[in-house]
Image 1 (cartoon, one colour):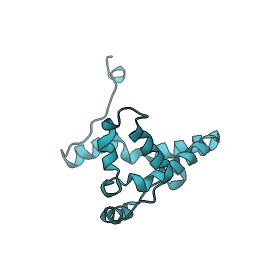
Image 2 (tube, helix red, strand yellow; image 1 turned 90 degrees about the vertical axis):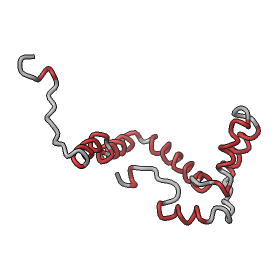
Image 3 (cartoon, rainbow, N blue to C red; image 1 turned 180 degrees about the vertical axis):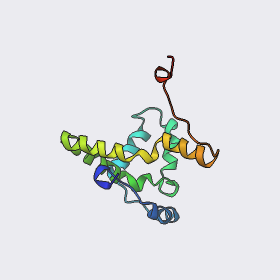
Image 4 (cartoon, one colour; image 1 turned 60 degrees about the vertical axis):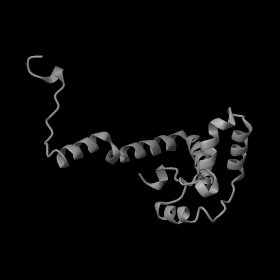
Length: 136
């Protein structure tokens, strides 16, 4: 797809293991926007704080397995970049078309075809919709 067509953020695959191995001993940078969101959740703005207790526990620095604290600032920056890019409709349209055309490798059609060939050792049959068959 290319980085020009995506809005990437967060730790890279190479960084994840190191960040996870030090999460019990390091303090996160403490992005104020995330801290504000946490305070709002804990104060009951979004409902009963007890309903969010497990979530709040899981994003504590020592428990943040999914590195939410690390990735949150980059996520918001990526959202801002996407909003700005959307304002320029011709380039946005071109960008989304390039991205969509590059994602064929992740399609379910490709996955099913590969599974049929490699797991079931089956050959695909040509598809003929009913209105293309003889006599119909």
